[in-house]
Image (tube, rainbow, N blue to C red; front, side, top):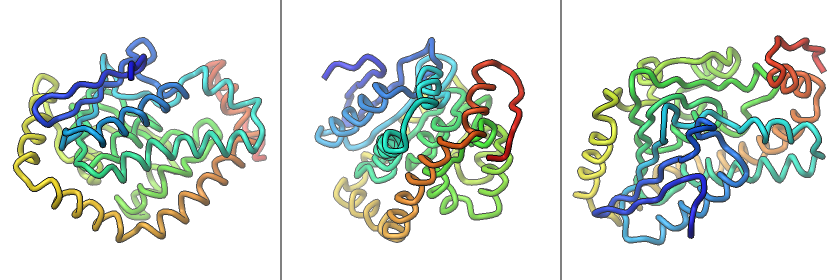
Length: 260
């Protein structure tokens, strides 16, 4: 398959998916989602035993594309449910991916970008990388990514990050366990490949079984939480605050919340 929004490379047992929308800061579009799902399937079926994710340019992934944000304002509840299910495919696809995954975060990873970076088994980030669950700042809710974030960092830290919507740097993310290592920019990909090489020394079947074991500890709860998150996500998109938040963001002004 030819990809417009990403690059897929195979080399010595390592597959690398590089988000390739630098003029859009590698933002997520519907086409981007479909291509990423297809690329994950391709890597799963390939001889590669480790997957690296990274981005072209100064951003890893800046969240949802502005054109996609605009389109959300006119969608029905059923359409919003389908969109949410589509997003789940990439987040859950990464979280449940049977082979070890490494995110090499080369820059900003905001909202959905934070989700993509932290769903990987290992997350490496440059010092200047920025993370943030910024949904509440545009009248939205992080219904899907929050279901896994709470398991990763605990309720108290999750409340801080999700309710404030603030951005935080790589070192703070490392303290929370969302980032494994903070790496200088000129060493990022070398370190990612070094780590991948270490993983290649392990039994592929054992790593696959271990990932299945770990994910199975919270599997049923996560299924229920994500199903609820899809509905909550869709309902949030029908609120007046969501419409105001998106409109204000696109118009580059402060939102005037109506609490509805």
